[in-house]
View 1 (spheres, one colour):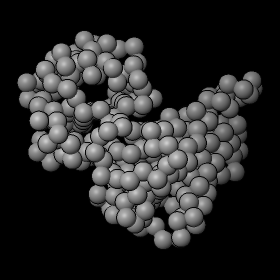
View 2: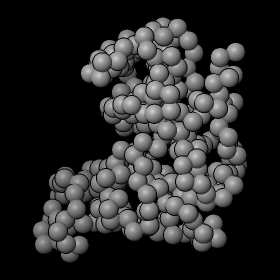
View 3: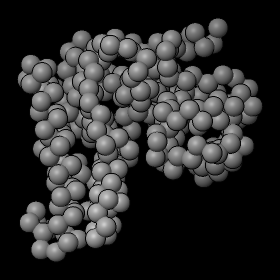
View 4: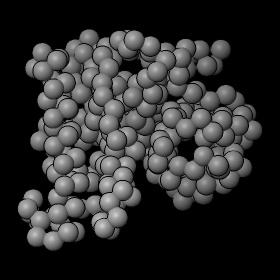
Length: 260
């Protein structure tokens, strides 16, 4: 079995693949202070829930934007599985050309998403990842990673509002009944939900123009996707497991080198 791990700033997604099929997945909070010993206990507990065992793991692929977590997972793989993990980064075969001024600056998660989306849907396409940051990635018809945009995520934006405005209290992030709020709670919810959706639609619309107006799909993914995606008019597909599938694809493209 392949263990695929996507470490984001806020959440970590763990998936188990058997052959080419994702047979189970879990989502946990990212904690950069957790050691390899703590992480293996969490992983073992998840596996036991599905009657899997650690001995069934034959490969590990990691995408991470949190360096301390990356090191802990590398340590875990070496100590408990006895082999090296595939960590997405420079030198790893992705099958995608990165048209960025400095390709090393592109986050591993953005590249993995691009690989998975192009494999599944073809191009040209745009990927919107609703995470701690909201990332917008453009992929050409020929599978080139063109670049994109990075904006504060919906939780970061709302936290900044509540922290800086002394008279505004935190509210649940959910869609209000109307855009025109009749009280402070619904007014805040309207501004946060519809405002963020408007930002997504505006950025995607401008990216489409720069891509010549022809985009096959606009794909939404990420842990915070469900908060706002229903209000985004530009989104055409939802794929919450996009990054895990991308890790599986990249592992397959590197397995011959790994096994030498």
